[in-house]
Image 1 (tube, one colour):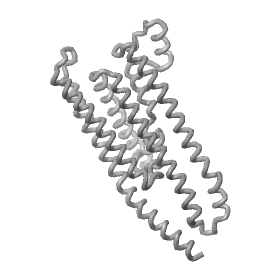
Image 2 (cartoon, rainbow, N blue to C red):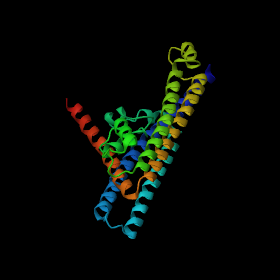
Image 3 (cartoon, one colour):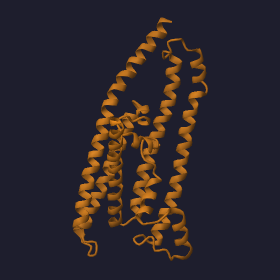
Image 4 (cartoon, one colour):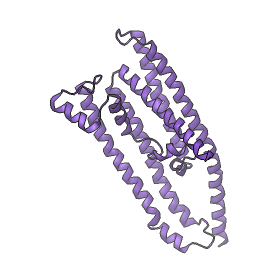
Length: 269
């Protein structure tokens, strides 16, 4: 019994130390990421204002390519940092207290849904996904996509379909993990637990396995977000990608700002 208590105390102390560390690092990392979004948006807007789209310029094109490549590099770096921290405290990514309640309410596996990338680009083109695409492919008469070619639309539609399939697989995987809480072996462990509900070796092992699976889910979700972003922007011309990424970053920063304002309003009530 004493050995069991010692193991429980050791693991509890270790988890508390990790928790305190990651819950300090994660908010800082997130704030750095949002600050980077503001800086990238500023750079994109500056380039957009200086860009002469009617007369392509080699220097402008090179600068735009460098700018877009740098954004992808930053995205990859952020995902790598998230992956390292998720292995220490994966539960934090599913209950991100450093984000606003609005941000958390629309979160999907620790971030945005990759399928939302397509909703945004269709919205920017003044189109609804189902009816507008159907009309365009049937008779080619739709004027809802003035900046996207038929080949681009077809490629985007195919990418969207593949992304939704992968997204649904991850959603199902997460649902299964959540349901395991009420299944074996945790249900039996909880039934046999002592009145003080302390962690024991069985519980630590069972929870650890669930957390490992949750880490994999976060990693796969981040990989899908990055992969979808890269493939979608490759379909677009550089000028189109520039306009699209500006809209993405504006929306992200607005969601953050709106969430802060709503939380402040509720705090005053």
